[in-house]
Image 1 (cartoon, helix red, strand yellow):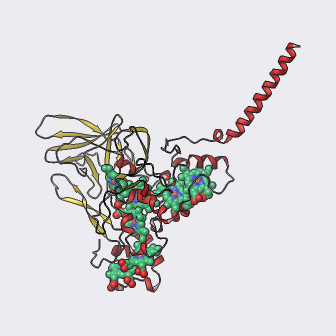
Image 2: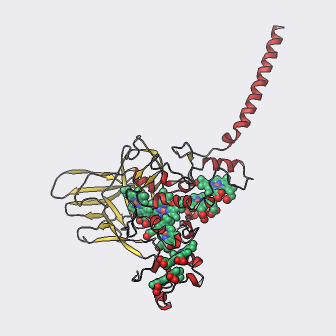
Image 3: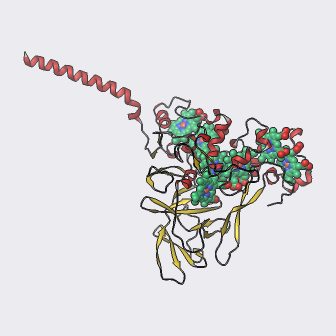
Length: 408
Ligand code: HEC
Ligand code: HEC
Ligand code: HEC
Ligand code: HEC
Ligand code: HEC
Ligand code: HEC
Ligand code: HEC
């Protein structure tokens, strides 16, 4: 009798456990069924999964995206992404008081330093992190445990040579902290180690190099998991639709990195702002933009564009009117000219310069109306023998009439 009761109870318990497990399994099926590998976790608790997970469903965008300056703007140093040369004679930066020699050894890369007329030994410093895709140049970071520092040598593309990093003196100086202020615009995400997020201490496993999909489209773990589990759903879930955002929200996606340094953080940290929010709640520039702003490599395309008549007198013009964020269109002036002509097609809005003048510039609207300017603040000290300082050329985003532009 006792035994019968026991089996009855046992049977009941087994059934109960089975039912509970089935319910539990069904409820949690989604997250158990597919979970992409998490690369890092944003301070808002959402997870980054990286563009490799997008390939499967957005192959066309992925393929062109990996060719962009954005995607390649930072990375772990390797023989593919370091543009500077390690070959004898091309691997030196010879300054007044110091000689730097760049050395490649077993697929690792070093800056060797010799202070002239002194016997001080300086240990070789390793190139660990590359900043800059190399359109104009690159800087290099070196780790000392969890602290990131900038090396004194940089690479300058126009002269294809090693140069002094901007702002460094031409004698040997201790490596400078490479703070999150650099990484906020040159990576997708970096997790600081200390509460004071403006430092140079990072969790090295939680840095997503390059500007990847999720910097503009926000963390995508849920989107990727959902669409893997529900291949029949053709409408995007857990993903913001940038096209449906307001003009200011769309501009803010780009302005977070293209509107000057925005060194004043008002809320959160350097990485808190996400697409869809209001950028002005998070950060601003220490001083306002003036129309004749000295352009530099870290210039303010946003500030200049919104001062232009094209922007003020049209409702929808934003960065994406001219730029395709998913492909590398540098130098393809024919693509950009078509964007101008799309609006400036009717006679009222037509160019009134003479055909002969326009012809001289190969009908290239941007050559005359968005001319290149030499950057004043971003000059580069070449080697001792070639001490002339060379500057970057930056294209202005103040679309205007510049009567005296020269062909470049
Ligand atoms: C398993 C398939 C799948 C994966 C993986 C996937 N997506 Fe999607 N995604 C979709 C589908 C389906 C849509 C809706 C149809 C469309 O726009 O192509 C979509 C749409 C989008 C949209 C447009 C949203 C809109 O409403 O305009 C963005 C942006 C997007 N995905 C980004 C990403 C990113 C970033 C990744 C990788 C981190 C990713 N997706 C991975 C299936 C996927
Ligand atoms: C506010 C965002 C921002 C910050 C902060 C920032 N950068 Fe940049 N950086 C950019 C942008 C945008 C460009 C490209 C500008 C252009 O093409 O006109 C750029 C260009 C560069 C380039 C040239 C890249 C190339 O391919 O030509 C280097 C090198 C560079 N930055 C290094 C740094 C370093 C080092 C720091 C920190 C001291 C830093 N940046 C801080 C946004 C930023
Ligand atoms: C620099 C920012 C940026 C990056 C990086 C970026 N996107 Fe986009 N993406 C945008 C913007 C802006 C739009 C809206 C374009 C428009 O309004 O015409 C967009 C639109 C989309 C769309 C919907 C429209 C379409 O073209 O199908 C998809 C899907 C998408 N992106 C996927 C991706 C994927 C996948 C990656 C990475 C492989 C990626 N994006 C990287 C800015 C970005
Ligand atoms: C996370 C910061 C960040 C965001 C967000 C961002 N950019 Fe950039 N952008 C950069 C940096 C850094 C570079 C310089 C890349 C390099 O050459 O190393 C750059 C370069 C560019 C270039 C020059 C590309 C080339 O081939 O030289 C264009 C054009 C551009 N960005 C447009 C945009 C537009 C449009 C958006 C918004 C949809 C946007 N960016 C969003 C940081 C950003
Ligand atoms: C979205 C539409 C649009 C696009 C794209 C556009 N513009 Fe404009 N542009 C306008 C409007 C609207 C005006 C103001 C016309 C007026 O004053 O009535 C304007 C004004 C101008 C002016 C006169 C500026 C002044 O200060 O008087 C020039 C020059 C110009 N655009 C050149 C260009 C060039 C070059 C491009 C391509 C790089 C371009 N625009 C792209 C809409 C556009
Ligand atoms: C009316 C068209 C137009 C609009 C709108 C526009 N751009 Fe550009 N942008 C251009 C052209 C043209 C170039 C030069 C491209 C080249 O030389 O390959 C350019 C170049 C750039 C570069 C590289 C600058 C350099 O000198 O290397 C950056 C960065 C950039 N744009 C960012 C932006 C951002 C951010 C916005 C929105 C605030 C924006 N652009 C809006 C037309 C435009
Ligand atoms: C050789 C340089 C040059 C080229 C190339 C050029 N423009 Fe102009 N554009 C000018 C000058 C100079 C003016 C002012 C003419 C005047 O007021 O006499 C002007 C005026 C304009 C205006 C203002 C017209 C008005 O009524 O105020 C617009 C809009 C414009 N250009 C658009 C364009 C577009 C679009 C292209 C490309 C298809 C283009 N321009 C190519 C030099 C040029």
